Image (cartoon, rainbow, N blue to C red; front, top):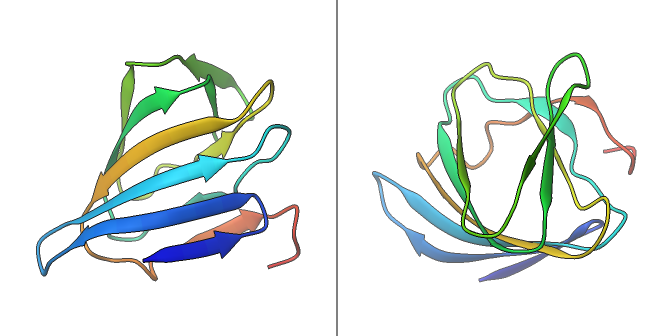
Length: 108
């Protein structure tokens, strides 16, 4: 299932009562909301490009192709494609609506 987003799109390729698998495609120059999750836990694996992850203080960490990161519940994060398109795999708990937005470039 493909879901268009203002920053690109996501494709849900697996969905069970225990986990969800997605591909996220972030367009160059775009970023997701600065957010956290109450319950959702996710692991990210970069397939293409350089993923920038900003924390609660806007400190940034870069993840290149082949690198992964883990996002725990309540961990503030913001994914960005600062210098080119990014494709990543997200495997998470099935809490798809568990998003608390702190900031958003698209007024959501």
